[in-house]
Length: 268
Image (cartoon, rainbow, N blue to C red; front, side, top):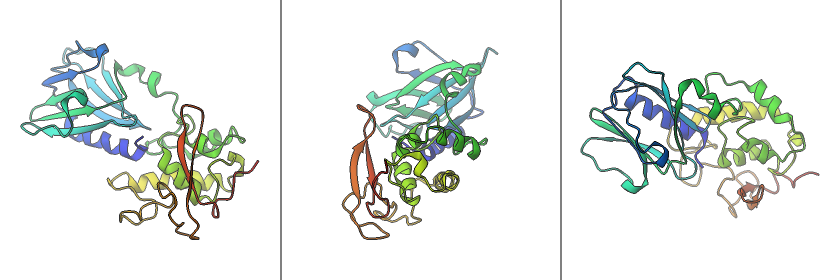
């Protein structure tokens, strides 16, 4: 699933392409919105909230503002396509297309596509914790939420978007390694949770403007990460082979990566 910085970049792309422009055509390819036509409305902005995208639209008839709420989930993406160019993915994967003069923004394989009054945005994102890339990022509040369940497995807590919004499996694996804590250890075992919150924000902030993510500072292939997707490769710090296991609640298991030497086994 895309990380918060990927969604942040998607919001920037949509905002630059659509904001302040009048929609000339809209095509919603989800049953609940199949008859909706927003032609004549003006897109005011697109912002990210954690892993959610909010495209705010002002109707041409002066009615109440609406928000297109989308979520990439595992396979989704937004692409901005100039008129006359072929779409980069098959048309049957498109879930929504928003056209302005000269350009169409197409959302492919989106996990969520819904339209709601802008005044009701909290109904879809109000449950989220502090947004790591939001203008109102609050590390103290994130820390309070993280420490609220001290016996909870660390990786599980960090992935919970109600704790802090924007972390996915990759950043969680890297944060656990950089903090020297096994991902299945309880939250209370983190030696410096304040530093972990600061580091989480730093990692996403450093990557938010570039398409190639890196937590090591090295952008070369296979050199970008400490442990994520490096199973059986040697740890960059100590040379021990990186281990991998599927962890998490039944039906929602995720691949978990760690160095058994730098991140000793989960504590009781």
